[in-house]
Structure formats: structure tokens, C-alpha cells
Image (cartoon, rainbow, N blue to C red; front, side, top):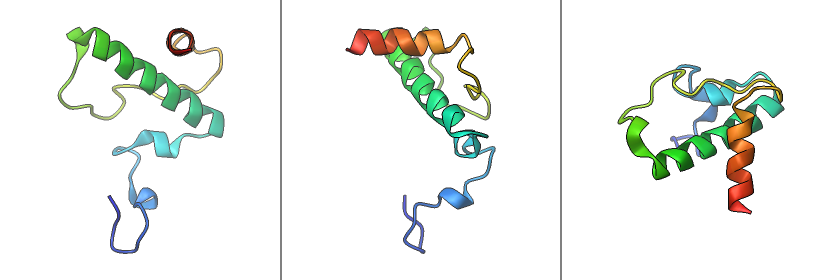
Length: 81
């Protein structure tokens, strides 16, 4: 949604509302965004853990390349190619 100033309201989003926008590094932002896509794809296939409301820190930031959650992201990327 666009606010009255003509922008997308990114600078007004709090950390609690969208922690991804406050990621400490660009790589953390990208790794987390890709991981979220993989999580949503998995929940589309297997909706047993599907939630109706995602609150703060339900999907924590991926802050390092060595994070084991990157394996899910790589697996999803391999399936999609």
C-alpha cells in the first residue's frame, strides 16, 4: 500500500511489523527473503504447520551463509530449476 506521501511506507514499518526490512546486512536480507519463499512453498505442499497469522519472529532472520536453513532454500531452488 502507498501512503499519502507517495512512497511505500517502508521507513515507517517498525521492526515488530516487518523484521526483514531491518536486517543488519544485505546478505541477511536476501538470505531471509529466499528462505521465506522456500518456507511458503513447503507450506503450500505440506500445510500441516500453516498459520493464520504470522507474528514477530515466527520465521527468524537468516544471518549467516552457514545457517542450516539455507539447505531448505537451496533444495527449493534446485527443484525450481
